[in-house]
Length: 510
Image 1: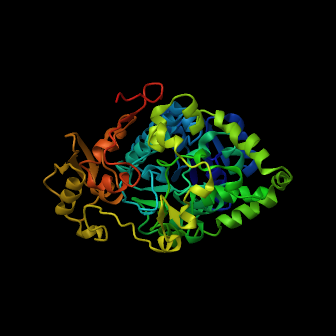
Image 2: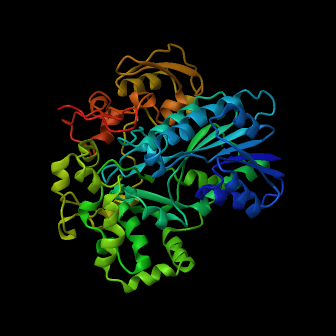
Image 3: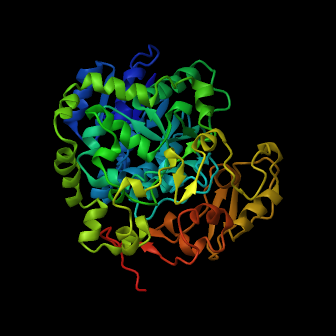
């Protein structure tokens, strides 16, 4: 058997390769890499089973060569933040264009068509806070303003869901703990995007790799019934559900402190990050038994692997804040940089405006942390919030209704909740993958299956074709969007967040 793997040199990819190489029924693992040097390194690392193809997934000829004769294609490749922010065109090529080329190439194989496992991201859900910390596949998708990564992954995932491939599965990866997490976060202003009170569910790269290998193994053995043609969240389990503050603080325990010792409240974004706790995160684990590691265990292990981190304990905390943290204020991706350089659009997107950024507390004594039971002046029972696995969302239909019972009235109801309508007049109850015609609140028509709309949460809007985040306006008529968007946005906000041809924010005239 030959399997084809993209993203083999990434953190999840390396973990998956370590597990896949153990499966004796796999004869060859064909990897796609933009770098011949990296592919040679993988061959040295994993042995003679490795076969390499050098090039871009967006190149039709390269793609066809890559998947030729394969039984499975595992698409873990992609350009993620902070590289997606620095090189947005590369993100478009890898996360969107390359996926479209791959889907078309697989579709064109009429006999012995490979099965596709496509890795998407929880970033497409958009911002969450304590009002709706729990979510599941099927929740409305509202990627955060200016997140090129989330926008391109949204479009790539939609392409897979709507493809004519016989066997596909979409896995939305959650926040991932990997050995390079500290060095990666300390090289860019991206870590300042993490909202302190955002709900985050983590999984380790190791467990993600085990998941991929277990899927292939169980399907090869004929024990993966019901898996294909569905979308899933890759969850990490109860012990890996934290807040942004707890997540960042965990990393600083390696050098003998907490986040409060190195950060101040105004360092990080107040809204429009991404993350949530999954009500359905155990679905994949129940099928493929992959979760074995916890966030606490990960940090303890990382401390043993990199004892030099402990050496930082000898330095005063204010010194580390100055030389390691505040130096990143000069990075283009940090809020301090936006403030200094007059990037008003990003300050509005991530804080609600320049004035709200300036008004953020300068002391932790004045800042309410969700994990400590207080946020925005409200008392919140954090333990009870984590225990109540109810999304508390209106889906426009009875989400718990079995697929076989979904009828045309459910489709019409969801369309109306979005402010649009169902154009198709015929629908056989339970035919979740039939192509249907829909119309948005703007009168724009699009085609998508009942599964894509009702079970995967997609609904066409300007972001599907352009870098335009228009959720302020859309939410005024879309009650599915509104219930989440207004958790962190005022109803009288009226911004259209846009990027120009050079991926720079377009200033909206007031």
